[in-house]
Amino acid sequence: MDITFDFEHSIVEIDKRIKELKKSAQEQNVDLSEQISDLEKTRDELKQKIYGSISPWQRIQIARHPQRPYSEDYIKLIFENFIELHGDRCFGDDPALLCGIAEFDEKPVAVIGHQKGRTLEENIDRNFGMAHPEGYRKAMRIMKLAEKFNRPIITFIDTPGAYPGIAAEERGQAEAIARNLREMSSLKVPIITIVIGEGGSGGALGIGVSNKMLCLENSYYSVISPEGCASILFRDSSKAADAADSLKLISKDLLKLKVIDEIIKEPLGGAHYNHAKTAANIKTVLSKYLKSYNGMNNKKIVQERYLRFRNMGIYKRSSSKKNSKKKLKKE
Image (cartoon, rainbow, N blue to C red; front, side, top):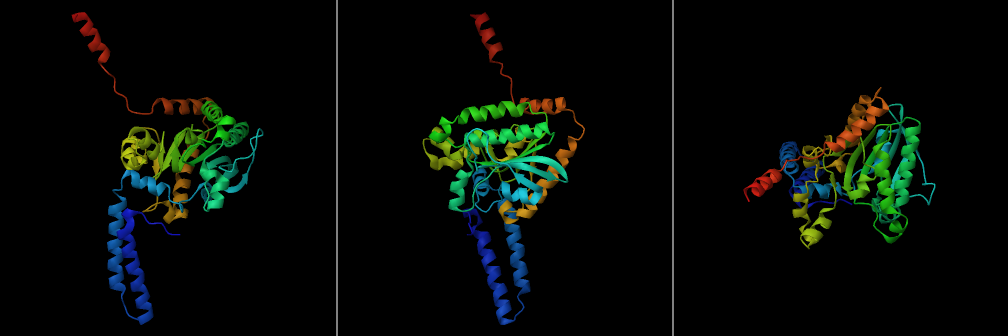
């Protein structure tokens, strides 16, 4: 099923016209190559203009595109000999988090990622990528295994958030995420995280305490969804586009605020246009960062992770204390 966003209609119309001309040229045996070439040039220029200036809300729509590649797609395209591991050894297995061991450039790694479904049945099984506490406990089990055998950890974030249902809360959702934050902060192997679509709240951070945080160009990473923020601040979830502007949740803003370390390019229009090309871009960046940890000692790896979080954001010292002291002295 093809999904077209409002801002893409003009591109789609030109594409339709190109298809019609190609069909006419074939059926009537006429040369329409010049007209087709002109239209293709116009379409490519329009694409550059539209996708080069889309708003944060439009990028979020692309991040949620149902044909966008998910963790499982990237695992197949980037890694070799992936073996999925199941269960948290406490309650059960959570299909919303895909965990296992694999090889990257013939070197062993651990891979963890949120996984959504393509069909309604798959999404129900995967809980739309929203993990239960057993999912986060399973992820931590695999991370501890990776630490034991000195394997780097690669995590893919793509979730609207952790599952907020009663059953998840009864089984300790908040505790499971909090434990992951604590344990990940001191793991003695490098952790590289890539936001491949949605990066929502603690559900994302539960596998995102890493040495390097990377974002695909059309992904977002935020403390809350734009709809949730609009409901709280504006009492109106339809104002999600305004909330998206204020939250500074797209890759460009996140890089500026030092929340992420690098933006990974996507094919023009989004990763759903070319899964293989997007995977190749991720593989190139992953290779670069993994090589940087060759020979780095455990203490330095943990220290680097700590400093990355300490250096996040842009701060401005307030002079309010000085002013209040002067005021008191005057009085």
